[in-house]
Structures are given as C-alpha cells and as structure tokens.
Amino acid sequence: MKIDFTQATFVKSAPSIKEAPQGLFPEVLLVGKSNVGKSSLINALCRKKALAFTSSKPGHTRLLNYYNINDKLYLVDAPGYGYAKGGFDLDKLFGEMMNDYFSKATRLKLVLVLLDSRRELSTNDIEIINYLREKDIKHLLVFTKADKINQSEKAKLLKHLSEIGVEKDEITFASTLKAKTIEELKNKISSL
Image (tube, rainbow, N blue to C red; front, side, top):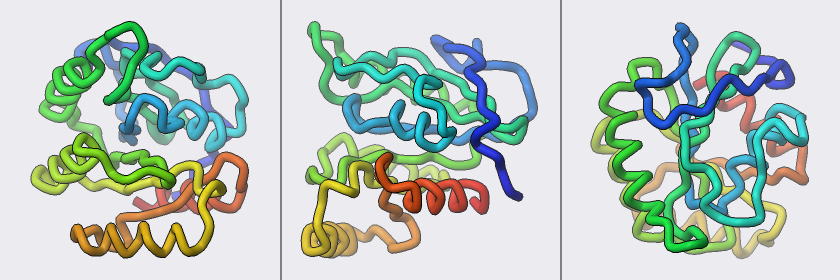
C-alpha cells in the first residue's frame, strides 16, 4: 500500500489513549528520548516544516500527538523519555502513559524507536526494545541524525547492535537532511 505522507494533518493531542481520536486507521507510534528528533522526523516524512512542533528544550511533548496521514494511518508522537528541563519526571510520564497505551492500543501496527546514531544505547532505549520484543510488538529501530556519522562509526554501531541480538531488518538509518533516507523509511512504514 502506497501512502502519500504529504497528505498529513494534525488531529489532536491526547493526555491518554482514552482521549485518542475515534477512527479505524492503523497507528504507527514514535518513541524515543526527548531530544532524539521525533518532531523533526515527522516534519521530514510529511514534507511540512511546522506540522509537528519542534522545541529546543528537550521534554516538550507531554501528550500523545496524533497526525492523520492520507486517511491511511495515524502517526502517534509519544512523550520522550530521559532528560527534561525544569525537573519534570519524563520517565515517570512515559512509563505511565505507555503502559496504558500498549495495553489498550488495538490499532497499533508498528513502533518506530528513534535512537540518536551518535550515541550509545541508554538503559531506557534497551528497556523499550526488550519490552517490544517480549510483547511481540512489531518495531523498527530508526537511527536519526545519520548524516552526522561516518562509515566506520556506522559499522561499529551495527556490530554493537548485532552483539546485543538486534537483527539487520530491525534497523534503518534516517537523516532529515537526506531525502533518500526519508523515502526509504516511508517505504518501510508502508510495507510494514
């Protein structure tokens, strides 16, 4: 199924899955650290500069943000985990909201786990990957900011991922500055 990601609109922000938009579209959830670039990736996928709000302050997203993509699916931007300014406990928010989401999200088809390709996986990153595996939830590890690493750094990262049991088909690299990587990601989302 080919999906036209440019046909995208913001639908609503919901404090929990109970307030999610009603509809029959499958959902693709984006999770990751608060500064990994989820909003930037949504904007790049949809070729709209300001569809998703990008903030210079990590931890800005604190709700589930729903985007209608071509009346074919919802992209759902989850709150980040990890660091936030102002002492806000993002990990607690993420844990509570995601436990609720995963237990009730009957339309969830795919989780995109966004990871910064320049950083080692954190404990939180590994926990979410293991959780998705245990629950048998289809997922794709999307390494963002891929334009910032060279081939030897990429090879080292792939070797590390292989050592911790991550399969090659679970991984993709993306950069908002490289249209080809964004197209590849769109194709993977469409096919999955």
